[in-house]
Image (cartoon, rainbow, N blue to C red; front, top):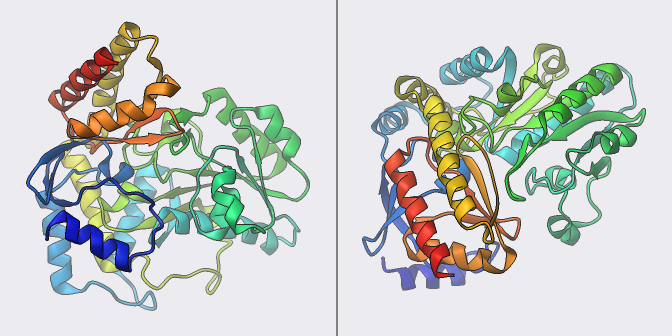
Length: 398
């Protein structure tokens, strides 16, 4: 179908929640390259916003999901599901000994984390329900996740918000310490705020949060929806910080493009959920968990977590060279592995983003002035060189 027809159908039948979309429709992909309906090739440095960790057309993933589809796609969680149990074991073994609950998205995972934190204290007869998160954070668009998201532009149309949530300045330990009350149940942070411009939390700040939570018996939750599954050069970003949370959430890359999310909790906290406390129709189904198992298998065989760390280091080095050359245009470069933010001078950010697209390079613009890069973990130095050379040419012209 031609693009103009697709756009016409979208306008007529689909709710306009995504605004003015980029006028393009992708038909297929291979490796880190996407092809549109006119056959034009684009190098993907966005990865479906940190989702397509294996790139496109990975044969191992194709075989896993097609094989599972031929057997059984869905069955109720009233019955045991082999893939579900095996994927929970993978997350337990590689993330430090957590029990899991599978759902369908990052927002769902975060909702589950909120419920688990509140249930933990309810089960102990304690009236503790407040959840503290950070300003400029993003935790999802469902109602409780929205209440935790520290961005007024997302919250304003949906007030009154779910009560019991408050936000403080990120990377400011005194602010969060002052916000704690005898009603505080949990503190939730993104170790790297992705949607607001790729802003990492300081290691000392995260360590102090862990100590505070231990002293005050507060549940520490890390939203690892974007930072997890190898993105930072570690399986999960909390391993990079050397700080263990009580609960962490995962989604995005967990299924390599197939919708799946997970709430992972230490056994003490996980035991607060009892039969009937939480549930899902589709979460952890045989099809989605087959995809998750394939992702772990391919990660191990192709050393993709290590590649994310190696390529992230190379990318940062090349971007730093560009920053030194164009210091009046690139104001900062922030990264952890292959989650990268290139902060630009405000007046040129939108232009640079558009020109990258004109040169068939896919990124996103977030935080108003930052090019966010979250490519498939399979990218090579040649892909990075293409990006650097293209960006250099764009900046030279401005």
